[in-house]
Amino acid sequence: MKWRDFLASLGEEPVFSASLLKAGDVDKRELSVQLSRWVRSGRLVQLRRGIYAIAMPYQKIQPHPFLVANTLRKNSYVSLQSALAFHGLIPEYAPVCTSVTTGRSEQLETALGTFTYRRIKPDYLFGFRQQEVAPKQQAFVAVPEKALLDLVYLTPGADTDSYLRELRLQHTDALDGETLEKLADRTCKPKLRFAAKIIRQIIDSEEIDSA
Image (cartoon, rainbow, N blue to C red; front, side, top):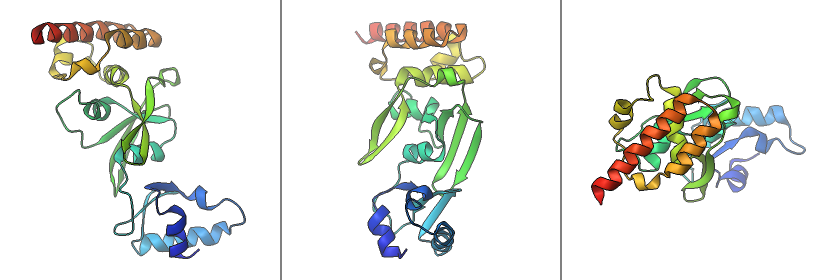
């Protein structure tokens, strides 16, 4: 495959899997050699085995970190501080893109940034949706309520009033207290049910203060 043909085929893909190129009557060994050559020449960036991004200045679309995170690990969605910052619920910028997954925990250092994956039980893989994170790019991201519950679940001692207030939650009108408690109930975990009640109290107190 020539470079111009490759760009015509996948030039609009911010991140792609080599499997997209291996369908049909393709010499897979020759394709692997060609991809390696393009990586060495700086035309492609290899993020992990079989996952690539087009390098600057050839890329037409800059990959959004959330899309990259989804592509690097299947059965995952962006959550915790990354999702909370995305939804505008915490004031801090999250430099590391954090996701939850049903697989093993790991941290990946790539040319496009650092991506952390935290393991949760398969039964807890809910409370996320696919949404546009940049023009022509969509990714699976936790809803605001589930991002908070994931953070509490994975953080020791996070089900306390002091910890939850230290998050300095803002724009709490984006949180729905009833949804929060329903999601917590679905986990059947007392820690999350307790935290949901505290968070709802924080939301209610802020609404009173702003009234």
